Length: 508
RNA sequence: CGGGCUGUAGCGCAGUCUGGUAGCGCGCUUCGUUCGGGACGAAGAGGCCGGAGGUUCGAAUCCUCUCAGCCCGACCA
Image (cartoon, rainbow, N blue to C red; front, side, top):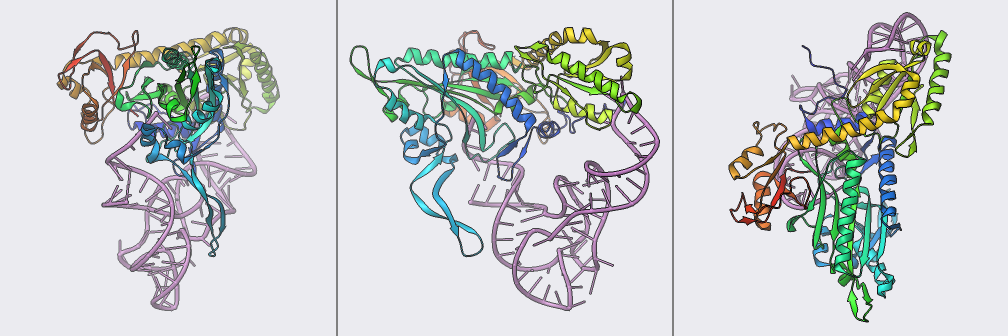
């Protein structure tokens, strides 16, 4: 039998990284910019991000946070204040050193008028926000401060990939200040939970909440927590982080307050963020060999109507039929919003037009032609399962919200099943090694997954393991999380005692 | 910053070794036949062959210099 024709070449199995690039291209989500490592996010990709923003923003507000905006530029001296922070970010900073350009005498321009103190384009905003918070906080009555900002940041990465790692990316960063360590820790965990809920219930992307090992901690944090998801190539993607910063940044920036008992104390801070990387995660969780597959709760359009009007004698009537259907569907509510329904009138051939929406991942594609019109019916295709069926128009309108919910649930269930299927408890290093070793060394096939195993090593052991096998500890699952069992054991790598199992995987 | 490679139409490439009027596929435009699973035919539009300098009657092709990008390594939301 001939191989089924797929919209995306190569397929996931043939060449996963190339497939990923092609999906983005086929869905017209983003492309590389003339500036190395930076991307242009096109409307289809940006609307997805806007939908992520809308939902998350509501969750932040519901947990008591407000938005604000801090500057793009950070004085170099600020970044120097926290030792671990400097070390973590120094190697990937864009630095502004001049404030204007002048004629270089050769038909070009050269920088002129050097700044007294260079400015750093923010790689993250702890230091500048901390500086402001130090002014704003005097009394325990000023606390907590619960602020989030939506912004862009720049990290001059060596190797970049659309959405997953770009030199400039969009994100949100929450920065909070608390009077006590307990309260700050509670905030740190609460926001991790907000991310996890969002990932599962909106993105349909199952995640594991856990703590990062010391080696993988945010530079300057006492504790870093993450949500980790499994992509279809079984690699892990860190999809969001929440940091308990202790008093490190409050000491560096001088965030002090007088407590109820009159003592001067340093405050406790947190920070937490997710980025446009989530879009990359979305693609690698749900997309298939025909392109993007979108969870309805994030889809820029829920339904696309394709009027079949190549026959001139019925074209006007069909269009009218499609328009009235569009209107009717727009009156339906899904996930608290009116349905977004696109009517594609472009003068393209049917197949070509339909495939363009398949590649964009629209959950439901509705064809409405002369035959449907006669029967007061529609022909509906589900993107996730590929199922197609004709049904009475009224039935479709009445069940469309339920169908979208079914797609949303189906995607989560499928992603969970994939993760579960490729997760293994492993108790000795030989098994561990063979689990993470591809059969074909030259062109590694999709292999491995999550290994849930005991760990008792230190930072150096972790480093050595990463160099040896490209496998890292993704996180240490929190109580109640997938992979957690709370039982002590023996480290598979060092043979030392292990307090509990951790999640190992190859990662992005 | 080390090691390898590539710059030719919007995109993907051939042509370079062996110098002689700039090519192919896709895409785009127009017309016709088609059309509810990705069409076909015909006619078109579109290039400082990355840049500068040289050799030559003549350079995409040879020489020198330069710029940019990609891959592999060290680094990473």
